[in-house]
Image (cartoon, rainbow, N blue to C red; front, side, top):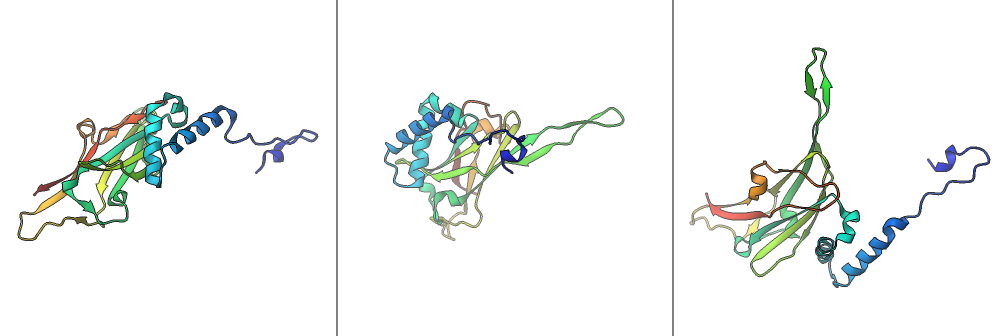
Length: 207
């Protein structure tokens, strides 16, 4: 329903504000300019460039405040997933815990909240280097709640190289960083700044 539906007789029409509004139009234009200078050739290159620019320039915090950034890394000897993109080999789940206190008739307090699914994270391939492959992700933290991130191998994606049947069985798995392993994947994002998670690593070890 438009704003005009609620205006009084004789009141001039109410127009929606221009977008982007004046307060952020400048930063958005400058952000686009700086990312374009990196000469990105693919969407993955663009997202890598965006991450670099945002992390190196505090002037863009108003646009990305409250976002959470992270990487899944693995040594090249661990292999490659047989999927269209490296990101397809992983499932990333982001939830946050809402606490809603309710007073029972007997005076006790119960929490009727729980864990809620957050928006799907943005995920892209790279940046790689001589030793490691990487998949990067960005999600929007739910402040001030406890957030949780779970990263899993996509069970429908096979990897190369495969283990020969006559060799000792080996399995690929994801090791959580120590900073999250102690909390079961829980973290607390900031309201205005950027939150950078430590790396998740794919390992390939014997059973």
